[in-house]
Image 1 (tube, rainbow, N blue to C red):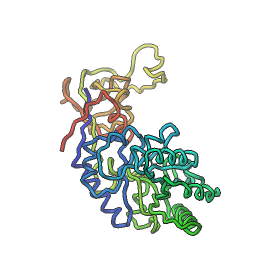
Image 2: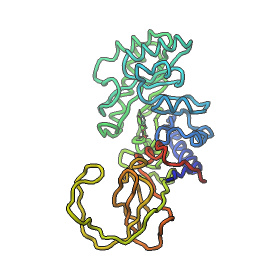
Image 3: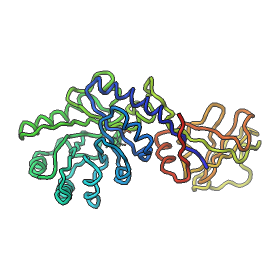
Image 4: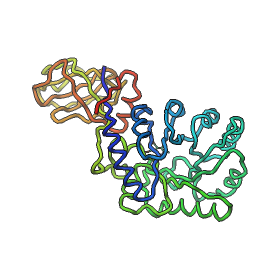
Length: 349
Ligand SMILES: Cc1ncc(COP(=O)(O)O)c(C=O)c1O
C-alpha cells in the first residue's frame, strides 16, 4: 500500500514561520485544513500554535476537528447544510441573503448566534457580492437578523480569475468596510483579504492597513506563495510526501510496438524513441494520485500512470523490485493522497 508520510514537526515549523510574518503585519491567520483532510495530528499542531482560527471547506471535516479555536466554514453553506453549519462552524463565509436568513433560522432553533464573513467579489469572479453592485440593502437586511453577527467582510483572489492581490484591489474592501460602518452603528472586526497569494504582499509590508486576516492553506503545507508560485525561504515543501513500492523493474524499449490506439483513459498516446531504458512499475495509480502531481527525486522520471500502476524511468541502476521511491507532491497531489482510502497515512518527525 502506498504511504503518505506526514511530518508534523515540519508543519509546526512552517506555521511558526508564517505566523511570525503575519503577526508582524497585524494579520490573523485561518489555517486551512481541507488539503490534508483535517488530519487530527496536524490539527493538533495548529492547536499548539498561535494560529487564531481553523478553516475548512467541508462540514464533514469541521465535524471531526477537535480544537478550542474558532472553526470557520470556507465554502458558502448549501441551503441543505445550514443547520450543520451552525452546529459545527462558529463562522461561515457567505454571499447571499437567502442562505444567511436560513442560517439565522437555524441559529434561532439551536439558540445560538452564528457569525458570518460577507464575501465580496473584487474581480476574481468566484464567490462574493460583486463590489460594484449596491450591497447596502443586503447589509441592512443582515443587520436586522437576531441570530447572525456580521463578524467581517472578505474576498477571495487568485482562485478562478487569477487576480493577484494588490494594494489597489484590497483598498476596495476597505472602502466597503468604511461605507458600512458609516451607514450603520456596527464595527466590522475582520477584513479577510485572501489566501496564500497574499503572502508576498504582506511580507513586503504592502498589504493595506485595515486588512487584518488571511485564510492560508497552500503556503503552510507547501511553503510557497501562490501569486507567483515562489518558495518561501525558511519553509518546508515536504510536509507530506508519498512513498510507493516497485513491483516490476526491467529494461524495456521506450517505444510501444504494434498498431497504436488509445491509452487506459482514452487519450491519444505519443512516444519518442530513446532506445532501451530501465523502467519500473510502482504500486500506485490515478486512484491515489495523478502522476502529473508527483515530483520525483533525482534520477527518476515519471513516464505515466494508469488507475493502479505508475511507470517511471530509472536513470540509475541501484533500485530493484521491493524498493520504494518517495515523491514530493503538488497541492493537488496532497489533496488526492490524503483523500484516497488506498493510501496509508503514516507520521514521521
Ligand atoms: C475561500 C477560501 N479561502 C482560502 C483558501 C485557501 O487558499 P490557499 O490554499 O491558496 O491558501 C481557500 C481554498 O482552500 C478558499 O476556498
